[in-house]
Length: 461
Image (cartoon, rainbow, N blue to C red; front, side, top):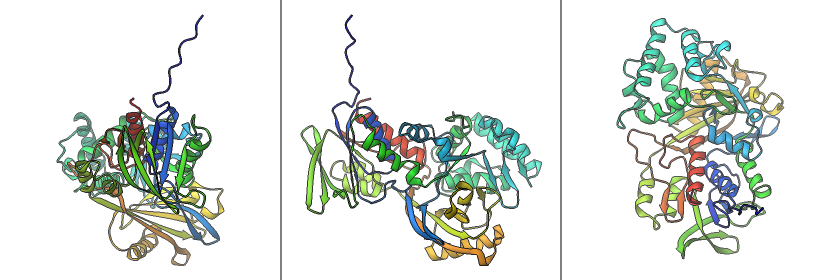
């Protein structure tokens, strides 16, 4: 009996360059490598992860590993969670799962009752609204349900020009202030009056009615127990170097690797020539396919000559900032790993001691997140200190600022009708990033999905 002929993987023998080792770039690299492509990753910074990376700071008792911003995932992030498993991570170990909820320090706010924590998202939300909204009137609860049912009847679809505020007309003020508004600004990084209702409703649809992953409900909140580097970039790079079918080549701006930044991309024959700066000068190499996975401003400048129209669309995106203020509150622990805040400027606070109970350095470390942040760093830090005293009741003497990090271009502004560049830039060249055309706002899942899609397109799948 003759053996069946071997069918090579779609990417077998193709050389693929991935420019940028953020979440999108590494998702592209892992996807391409799994299909047998010869992958080379270029990264211009010392720390992989892009806008979701680890950060080393000086703590009260020594070096402390934090992040450039506090991120959360949800059970609906199926692509991200699946890729984590593919590179050897165990999401159930790396992430703390919480039922859908936005509790406040005083015990009010939306919480899912313990007896409904494992229910599917729509049923869990119903239980949370009816039984887990302490302090809400029945009129406020029923008003939220009426609006939610209206969105469901409409298929969570609306006209592109509408804002979240537009589709929330009739919603009780308390429901808007304590649930829809905070969800909107955390997901889209713009306030409801400026946020795309079409994108927001798509997020709600998938979080409430979409499939979860790994036994988690789609709406469950997944909080990282480790730093963002260990959560994905470090594991992805390790897998690429040691376990990929064809080990990848990784160039990073560190002491070992000399290549620092790709400065030029040019068409050459049927492929693309990339010129990268090194301490010894500029070195060039030709690749069959290129996936460009840097932030949009860098991509627009680098690819302006390759596709001027694409670069113009990319460069016209507006951006909004996220600020994370880390405070140390010695001997203190919040009543929950995550709390919603009523006052300004931060919308949420995370207790990293809850997330890492065995890490002595993490105890007392609080991360205050200011989405759509505006203002100067020092002013925001002082405002958060006051917020921690007033809303959380933390004693003045125990609060110590650790680090305040502002990502000025954290996300593109997801406004009604925003035009996002497509992933196809030129034959053999694709873009990957949470800003490229897609159904979601600038989230980790959007970044990872774009990387996977770019790799599949590059390999002809």
